Length: 310
Image (cartoon, rainbow, N blue to C red; front, side, top):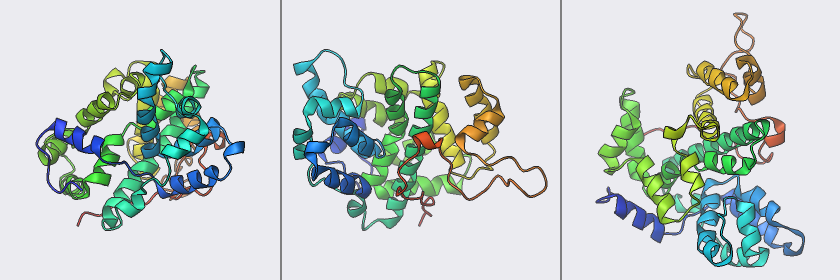
């Protein structure tokens, strides 16, 4: 674990590159179940498991990249492509007995809550992004889905490997709501998480497409805007369906999909606005999600509340 801030960006990248990234316990259990039936599964089955876990997804994409230059010219941008490239049995030989994040952070329960909260938010963003990419007839909707899933990867890794620093950032932000995230990150970490994320994409040789899709500065491009709006909706709706930023989100999503804000609300599963009768209260206490066609498995855990700084 990282107890104090590291000297520079290169040190952060080196530390994260040298340590095994754990995966969610639910992912590990599902992989173990698939491994018992190797003759009947395919890359799509493995992809369906990995794509609910940003940590597992980035592990697969990072692992496959060295094979790319040896066997083919194009980039491997999806988990299913990666599994097909490796083969089912080699995949399971490598990803056998993976570390589990719930065990890694057993001594840091508040940090575990923080990680699960961000991971759940990433799952929701990926479902929104995938649904909208299909609606827009994107030629490779899974690329958009993965970009949304990994958009906040650096934040997840911070909770995993530097729990004390992640809690320090949270405490400062809750102590002063006017603080900008980038400024607090710079003060506590000596770097900004977006810098770390871009550096990791380069160090791990992730497909060039992913950092472009995850870069909010290119939000005018429809595919990037798809990702950004999905991440924003997941972030704001995690605060409750009465979050003040949501009306602007619905309007922006409507522009992307050529839908009315009301149609967007219905599509993302938001409750109807309060009409003054007390019905349709914006804070329904439910977890929003994409339509059923893009929903997560029924046994996916409900999102934990954000951790309270200690």
